[in-house]
Length: 338
Image (cartoon, rainbow, N blue to C red; front, top):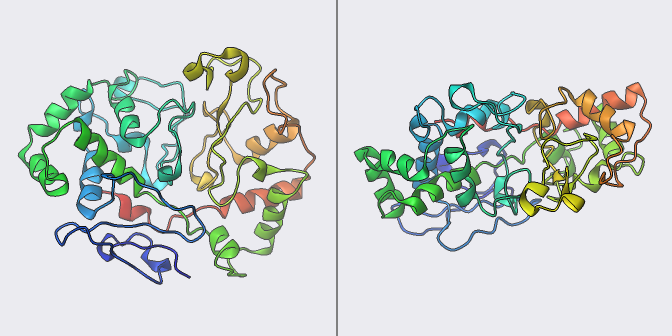
């Protein structure tokens, strides 16, 4: 089965590759095309192609604290590879211990997201990367100042010339970070091997029972967490709160009447690694998440009609959690580190 086309030297998920292909854009830095049979095509605009040098440059920037005002944190501070690019904190913590009001989401598979942030307030990865750099509660530095710091280092100038044949500028800096984030792909979990590679041994009987529960009309988890990406990218009020301090989608639309408390449906991939859960990190475990949905939610006036409660036995809950843990793919996270 042809899962993933990628340059050999990158070594991303090589163990599950049966075919590799380089689509050349020149001998110095050939283009990398990522294809996963059971995922939608990764559609890239012209000029945003992935290449080894661009990915490596973006990775270096991602782990470099040069992009924060006091040079104490980097992008990786809130997006740790071994936690599926989340951070294990209730909410993101920036320079000087400043606390954000939202949980840090996983970055795996962001290449398929049609908009970024939990409220969908950003249309592209290139513009999204600017937000945390300038945000007072995160890295707290004007993007132009961060860019000047990078440009002042000859090593970076050389790397930008090699990757883009251009100097450090707003476009190339944001594109380098975005390119690295697009390369973060998670698709080779036990679930994937069972469901799409037809490996009947990839899930044990308990996990298979959990998968059936996940798909069942009674629980209806896959109504929003649609396979294979485990999200439909829609905005839903899941009844987490009766009164929302964080207005969610309404922060973008200014439409409290229709969008209060609506957040983008989160991916479930690697969910065992990304606790705590929900937009504010208020649920500490998968057990608590299941209990929330089983209870039927808070009854907020905009709560999705899909959140209506269900019955689930203790044994079924264990089965469901076993399946959710089978969505974990840690086969390559070390390859994404600096």
